[in-house]
Image 1 (tube, rainbow, N blue to C red):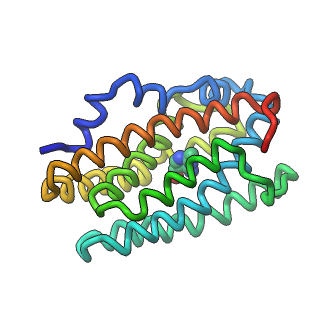
Image 2 (cartoon, helix red, strand yellow):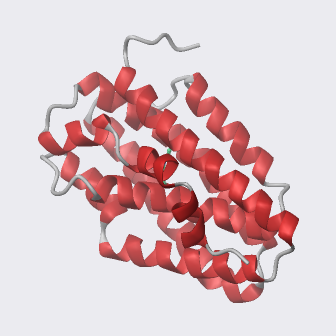
Length: 211
Ligand code: HMH
């Protein structure tokens, strides 16, 4: 028997590292470099494109009782993709950039999870959304213009959405076999590691070369 909260309790350091990063602290204080922030923005747009496909895939495996929450997520992500395009325009950025190897690795993992049992996918979805919900919230009120970004994933409605995702993942995990629960734990660990690396990629920019 495993619940989402158990996963966090079993891997406190991994989860801490996924949700606390100097990148986010620098957004909070307003000292983030524009290049660092722009790298994050362009790469995160690319991530969200692939994440949209993942979310649609999770829906295809879900029991009909879970549709409401997941369809709400898909509607919200439509708005999010347009918002990313708007922010990129404001900052004079092109979104057609190549994926950084870190982003490429993350999206390959996303694709590999699409063939896993539904409880594993539901757990991955919850962990990915919670990482941003907590990551953007934990530093406290952010400096402008980063407050708008923090609000997108830190707002109370998004927090509520993540709680619904947790309930659905928990429900599916309770009905899952032991090996499937173990797969869910392994995927949770991968999400935490990849989230950390994603922040690190943007923070290290532009000193790292893109492939
Ligand atoms: C890397 N993780 C990453 N980007 C995001 N936009 C989210 C999670 C939340 O959707």
